[in-house]
Image (tube, rainbow, N blue to C red):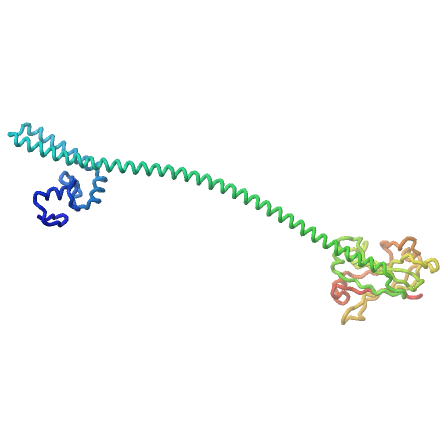
Length: 352
């Protein structure tokens, strides 16, 4: 005989039932053993599919078996009569035992499979619990790391702020130091110029450099002034110098540039005539193509002006209201007189 399920040929008739048995048969394609009891899956299945079907339909198959047993018991009760012969009774018992054995094996198989599934589920739950514990540990570690990172970020920001403040302080100190060095350098140069006699012929040509920087310093200090080198009318004559208030002096501060002629105590003052009475000529000298285009003013000393009396100390004191040479501040922006941040001033003490 040939198997209609798997196509195997030349099977003995006596072995066909064993071959196609849903439980113990060796046929690779089988029907569900509960197909004749009402299972909806009536198609052929391979062994793996059948095993999966039996495991998933465990409760349904139990219900079908329960209904079959109840129906059998009800049918037996309704007949209410014993088998007519011992042969019929024996056949009924054998058939019932065979049916019960088949169902018992199916139930045993599904019970084993259910136990395996239960064990797998228990293992999965255990693994899931361990994973949950590890996840909590990772979360705690991440929280600690985030806290540590936040603290490090806060410290870094604080350090950056402190570094920026220190850098700003250093820059401020460096700028202040540079400004002081520049001021000291100019002061040393001014002192050197002031200590060196410019001439003995009554004339002074004074070169004033860095006009814009010195003007800025003068705007911040009303008492700031520049002093020219001293000069003499002769080897044994009067000694004088010029004070320049770049931003004005007294009531002229911020409005005019003020030049003051200052008499200094000299070695030959005892043999000179006082008060000083020589005519003073003052020039702001034009530069470059404007050479000769000078701005000239004159001053004739007044006998009653204390500025022209014989110096008692090192020099006469510059007082507000004393005779001087005022010029508009706009001159400091005029390229005729200030070229490349340099200005030239000429002063002449003429004979009477």
